[in-house]
Length: 431
Image 1: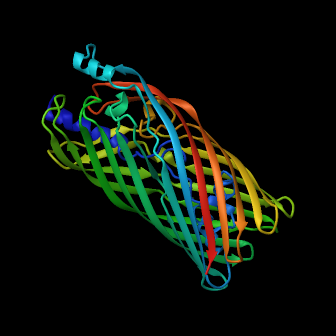
Image 2: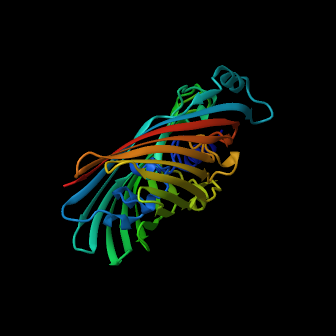
Image 3: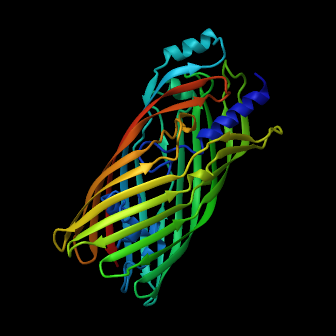
């Protein structure tokens, strides 16, 4: 195996997995994080961009005007995500004759593992009314990420990934302006940080770990409008721009009997994250009952490839096709004011995954079409404090993957069975 072939294979695997990594079975399509509001969680995010809470600011910055009057309004949300994602390798192919070492290594390793990792996702918001028409807002969110890690670190799929994570965090300063009764506009900036980490077995399931880590800052925008054409009707339309990252990082390949002497490289991986557009309705049916709905489009089709630009040895860019499609999310829900202090809500959602084939499905991102069932409540403790509680169970279609190893000498195929439970808690306060 030549040095050039070793290095190209290593960079190629990182391109495919390290930067799109981290999405286990829990979140939204691709590797987006939908859990940004405990109130909206309880209705499967139906009506999220037209909600009366500050949590709607993530999808629609015009929601910074949702709370009026003197003082500062705040909202904090915490989502505890418990994913299950079982990967089973049931086919291994390669050259016409695999060496006894390769055959024996895979035969001795477990063929399946649960790669889901529990996670806590926070989201916080604040707003302040500057004038009778102008509102300032700030939101702190993690819009993409999570983590996958097999319980059996030496299972067959370890050559495709042992640990995959993408951590993002960002601040969005926004403003909202009431341009006329029933019409509020909003806009803001996205100031984000991303770090990707990926580890995989070097050559064979029992071999030491090759690792990569890279990080970067990215910037974008957000805009939206909130319409109230009649009493009891709220229509929200929001947009979050695409954000691009150039994750500067380091590769560390250990010495093994399969790949030879260890090596250390530097490089950069280009990662393009999608635009998100959200349209929501919050419609009063009676004095105590509201109908909620949301349609969301995520521009995952801009995620056509992952590109690694090596900085050492004059190696050309490594480009791995992704071929993802746009993602779509549809949800309906309802709210019922049981009393002045207690509101119940429930919702159902269907989400179309951007991944259309086994070749496009990364073992670090075993995404497929999914269904959401959710319930929740809001309870007003005092005039200044309200709590929100939500729960969702996410059913994810069974799917398959078909991926090459780091050097392109082996192709592993298998099945994925996933689901997720999500528990959320939020608190709204006024100071």
